Image 1 (cartoon, rainbow, N blue to C red):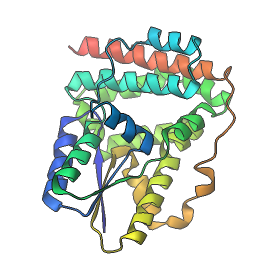
Image 2: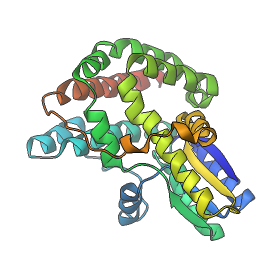
Image 3: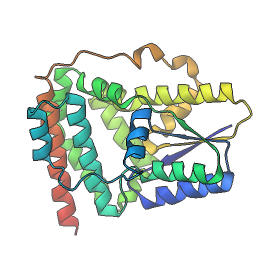
Length: 266
């Protein structure tokens, strides 16, 4: 049996929900939305989630000029956005996954890492067509206006199904390749990983802790495994450095908008 728990990576109530579910249900396996690389990085940092204070847009760009790889640069931007969001709500991004790890170890059950290798996901994000990168930049104001309307109330309301569906629908309609790389492909990958767990441990009670935006997709593929196309999920695609610019500009715009939005909320 598999029970999916949808979380928000920066919300204290998600941490509490994970701890309560694992401690209460005492599953045989806790599956988490992490890959081996991110799990190993957490372990190497002594399970600390915070990004160094000196990390900024300027420092990331300097690292890129000195020869840093494109996936590392993109990962750094995304981590910085999550870091500053987490500060607004008193929880480091990823605390929900860390709570799942600690709770699983507390009760002595197995831990399964079910997410796709982060390098492959970032490669697929970087390889989206140039026209879609340009669309991401040109539509940035409209997307931020929608996000801003959600942030204008209680931030945790974003976890409500209707708001998640609204965000995912907009992403799916306007940026289908980005949606595929960040959401749909990973839904397939994580569903397949859970199906493998069920095959290896047919009697096991499994609790899977995943981001709330993945709940419906994973559930769909668990019920319809014939729709999973594994051959496309692990391939590395060619990436042009020139095509990275619109994506980086869009991320910088998102980050600046977020900082301004939270400043006015205080």
